[in-house]
Length: 183
Image (cartoon, rainbow, N blue to C red; front, side, top):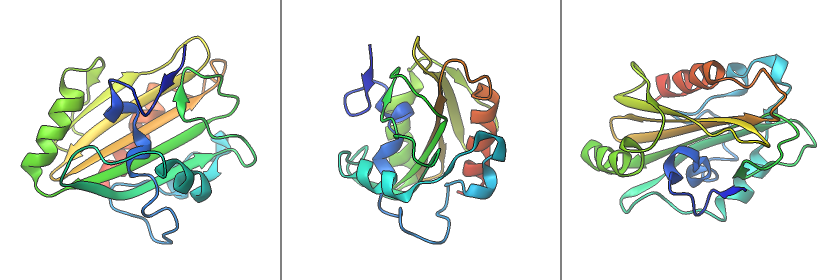
């Protein structure tokens, strides 16, 4: 069974695409978004602004008063970008998006509404709060991390084939921490 990002009940955790195109063509890094330099070279992925722009056409924002603030998709050149979890992923992908809300209290309400009661474990020392969820299934290895820094909500997902032992919760946490440090 696959999970469509557009209808998932844990939309925020795996809904990286929410913020994925407004800065897809930007040459400078956005606050809360990783860059190519953050990605370990052994993954073999490169920035893919075309995929980011395409996915953003299908998704909206998390809540009124919030807007896409930055994004990045990293994929193996020439590989198809997967926008569903538990779909056979033939190559690694890293997806990162950030939304900015009008006020920290609004970001907290959005974060609490989508993440607080979801499965996963709390991550200490990532922004104001963060949570990691194992999204792996029989056809893909995947981890999603969502965090809040003041009025921003960040999302990072890393996924790949079930046989790819490089896709770990530790790598997802490392990349999310790098992104959150830029917020």
